[in-house]
Amino acid sequence: MATNAVSRTQEERSRDMRALLVEATLDCLQAEGFHGASLSVILAHAGVSRGAWAHHFSSKQDLIAAAAEAMMADAAAAARTVAETLDGHEDRFMALIEQVWQRFYCGRHRDVLFELVVACRTDRALADRLRPVFVDLIESFRSAWGSATPDATGGGDLLTLTLFVLRGMAMQEMLAQSADGQAPLRRLWTGLARDYLQARHERPLGRPAGGPPLGAVR
Image (cartoon, rainbow, N blue to C red):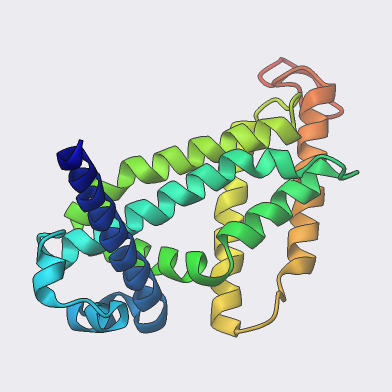
């Protein structure tokens, strides 16, 4: 029993140390950027020695990849619970887009996400490691999206496009350093997306508004 207790304590200490290093890495990626977040900067921020760090990660790249995986996994878990926050909202669709914006395209998550995306352009090992995590995040968004638009046809592609649109807005917001200057554009996009889904739901798939099915001879 004593051995098991000691073993569990060691596991807890190891888990806590990894969590501390991960949080420090994410903080430094936001504050210093991918290239500015050197191992020395990260360890100083965490208050951890190189010797202690070396027991948990094999390299700086390994640490950054682990931090990115943790952030994206947390985001995926949060995305799966977004639907639970929509109850009571008269406009669940608008509420969903606002929840996605606030949780994933503002603050540290936004800043670190852009640092990682740029880094993945030239670091193929990092890109390969993070690709499954990004896929899981998209699938989690699909689940939340379906709860807000349960009868929508073609909603999956619109979800992907919506995420890309929000990502572009987030980049502009970051460059302009404005306080949610994209809110009018989000409302505009929400209206366009709602109209598209409504139109797809009200007519047979492939039939354009006011005309015969696509490909039909006039």
